[in-house]
Image 1: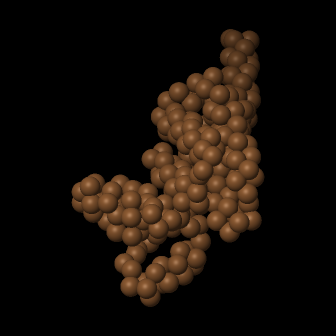
Image 2 (image 1 turned 180 degrees about the vertical axis):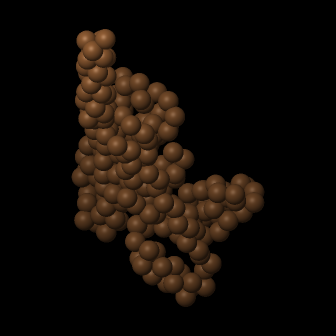
Length: 226
């Protein structure tokens, strides 16, 4: 009897060791956000798309993004800022000129999930870092091109780097099961769409500052759908 009890205890101990070793290969709950709040300068909002489109075309003619952001109503966006203070400064300048403008704040969501293998967490982290880098770099490129600090050629080179990085991340993710369901699947699909949007601007020979602002807004809006 004592032999049987000893064997049973050894089996229990063995199982506990296996479980412990397995848990050591997994990280605790993992959450990473892209780390950006976006401040959209809005020229007007409408219940119908046709009215928003008319204002959008007018904004584009003046050099604004003219992006139509659907959030209950159709909001026509002039530009995007990552600093609340800067957005308010531009808003106040326009208000002083008699224009009606408001600020819409959108926060890019965290990508949170349960226990995964360490290599899976590292893959997710790599993709989120790539997207975060894209969001910030496009913003910097837009400002640099707007002020003349960056040439069209330099902008294209930077956009190409971002496009290649995102496509590379997407292809790596595509062979992993964790990116084939739920929020991670949506995130991976959005990453590919961002790469496609960047490529469209990159291939244009006559893009303007407003096109880069439009791209930056579009990237941030896409990411809010995760």
